[in-house]
Image (cartoon, rainbow, N blue to C red; front, side, top):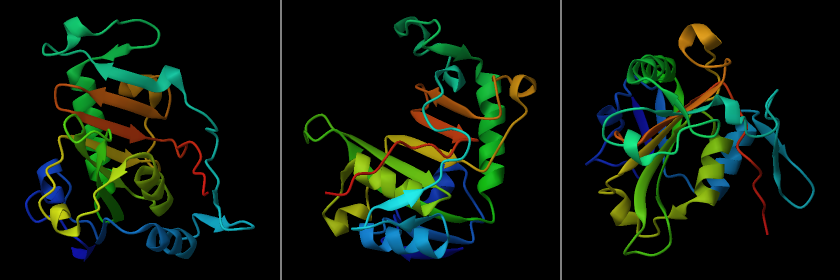
Length: 204
């Protein structure tokens, strides 16, 4: 596996079950991710510099395809219903195995960052994408780690694994369609598959 950029030696991708990636691009800068996205033909640069990407059939969030794992450590703290739809841990484990299998032998992009600006309350997290433009979106949405040395020991508390090219069999896989967003609060992990949608990135 070839590593590029400021790799995290304390918490490598193997701690998430990700192995055999061809190249891992760690914590790339915004200009570098622009270049990767154009090189990989994920999008194109429009007038004055915005990156334009096509999200496929999903052009917005799909609430019916978002699930939360119903497990002992958190099930009593969630208001279950049409918004917070439950799935069983076994379904999540199967989907997660599919995501990890899909991410093998691929070029991957990693951002180690924070959710929340207050140092006393922010949550360290890691985002792993198969597309550079999704990694750019994560870099834009979350708080960046500006201390380059700190990146080498960044300890992610939450992890987001995004495999937009992976599709599943809908109800046969325990979900509603070929796309899914599944949140496991007990494991502090989110897995996403089958959808390219990521909102919009604004460049000011």
